[in-house]
Image (cartoon, rainbow, N blue to C red; front, side, top):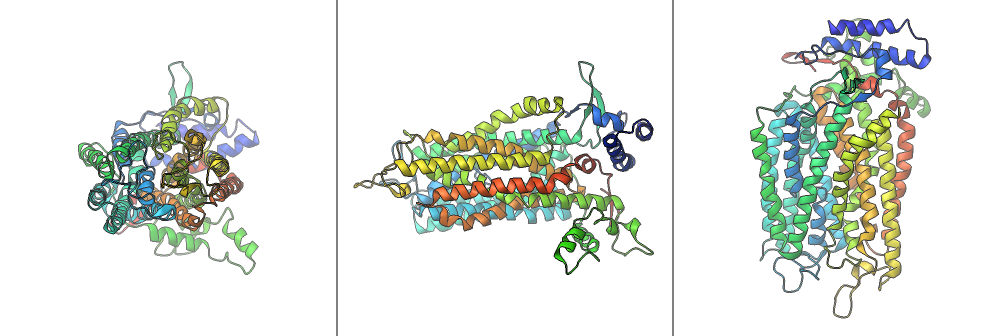
Length: 606
């Protein structure tokens, strides 16, 4: 069999090389890859030629083709991202709706060609606070959605019900903006209710759609292929997952770009009722595509709650490692053998009754915890990214726009992503691979932190010059003439472009890679849960952002951007120092053998 040949090939290499680096890598694959070859339940790897340990080190790695069912799910996400529900960028429309007052003689909130659209007139602090709360709630709910999917309903059913909840939120949002209600105290209450309902729908959608799209590609082992030029290459499932998430993110931003442009111009020239009705209509595509592909999607059935067992393993591994000496405690808890004591094979005598899993599942749990430790750093990154949704939109309103809606410039971010995602996939990443440079996920994330910090430095410099050139100096956000007409800085609004392009590159490096890392490093029956932990980092960032609301007004906005840049820059540097050792385990973590967990119904292969 091919599996036996692969194992034999690994062992044969042991006697042919003595290079220390090679020997280390050879042992890695002997201990991890070979054990996984007997878990191919669906025979999807039958007939494939697997690489030897030497080939794993020397052959170029490429990605596989993306299944069509993954594109169907991406269309669902495109329609969702066009809509208000879950959209990072649609909340820029919320910024004007909350911050700016209803224009004179307007019953819809439209400002027209030379006016400023608005509705509630609650000010920049209220605007930043509510949009930050919206994001916080949208990213804390996925934990519940993930638990329901992994334990009871499965990802597909959870997504379907979540779409229904989100649709209800859309309808409530439209009601808050119809003439006669918009601008009133009731409008504010109804609008906040719509934010809560739509972001609750997020809980079932966002933590499950990302794992579902990557699950459509089912090959889990590297295999040999020959290109049209005769070159032998390794088709790497990890690289294929990277590619899936890059184009998934591309679809997201196509929806965001088209949706936001339509919403912004509807807000500017017609009114908020149309700005919220357009995405609701497009969102109706989601249930139709979900129904159309119901028999085409590969679905992972719910396997019961394994979270208590995972947490119990973690607690069990800590036994005897605590000390009154903090340094010794940290050293014990981070040692290489931390998880070994929790493996069933390491138990002396009769193992505890709750150990209804094998050693390989403990390795998967360890990998999942390692991924979650990576996500702990992400709130510092999202703190920079979140400026796109509120403060940068408000900054644009204090600059010369020449009739351009102040919230349309943020579309440079999705536009840059649509342009540069294919360039990274087809040009930059392959060029790095051909040059022998392994741009691993953790390296990408570190670079993402750096480019996010650069984006905030750009914004801080722009804000500094706005204060220098605005007629009201450091109070540019409330500057009006004697007739209450806005006075703005002579700086052209397109100067903001650098911030949006830099943050787009940071998303390619950090945000897309975070999705990939959450999927590839989670135990199979905890993928939605680990994905929700990644998303929760954004909720934590939103909570931290609430502490920065006091800086989201004149004359403190330069400090707002500067502090965000410092936190992301220093955080990215510390992140790389901490994860360098983990980065060296990338291949080992991607090639773990499948674990087994015994639930109440019997043995469940994972």
